[in-house]
Image (tube, rainbow, N blue to C red; front, side, top):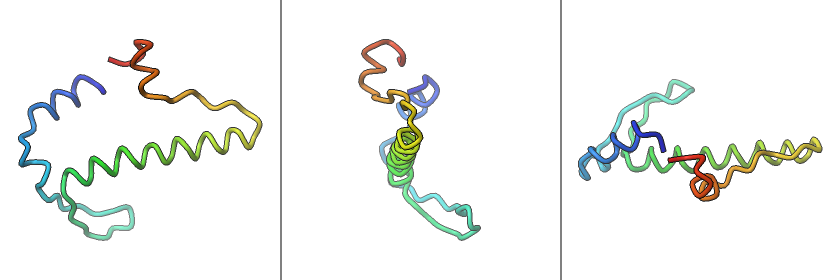
Length: 79
């Protein structure tokens, strides 16, 4: 996790995770979601797309990048 994001989350009061955020999706539809749910969605959605990319690369005969988070941390690729 980047230092900036870590600092932001460390300083965010626990109550802020339950706050509602109003926004519009890519179709222009209005929505409201809790900060906690938005952060969870971002993490899960990114994993979904990494899986899609790996599947497409394998189908094309290529070897996808190794994207294991714990491995990257252990190897010092991430702080």
